[in-house]
Length: 183
Picture 1 (tube, rainbow, N blue to C red):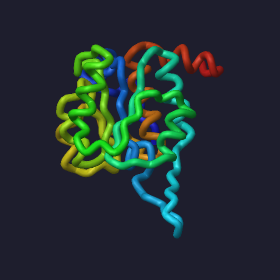
Picture 2 (cartoon, rainbow, N blue to C red):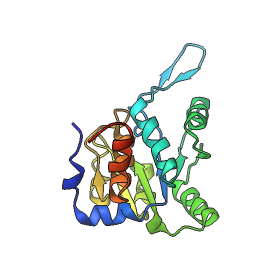
Picture 3 (tube, rainbow, N blue to C red):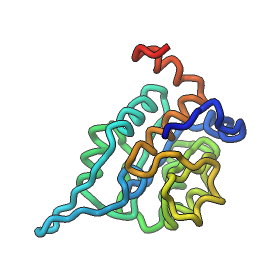
């Protein structure tokens, strides 16, 4: 189920229009949250192709992207490199502190940053972000603190939905659609 972006509340679109940096958690946002391990300890993750194009479209539109994850996984670095995400912070116990360091380094205000998370370690950042987003299958305690909840669950196009929301709010999504032959 894909949302009708013209039905997103104006207050959410106003916040999304200011976004210059979109920050995402990995497990439960880019992925479905399941952790897959082989007998020898190697880890596997599944990423949705729709999300990848969304990240690339944000970059084309001048919106920077970042990842903040509590865990470390080599595959996250590899996927981020494929997508051109240069700001990758793994093994972060204090996500809020990391978020604030990124904003300071980029000289951005909190209202210029979006954050998408799915579980309690994301809550401190969600409470500060200019656009706080959670995925459809997020922990229920996050919902009251978020401006937008995706229709798609984590790992199933939720990141793309956030990207499309930002691009729509900034008046860029229709041009992107036309470029690919829509409308």
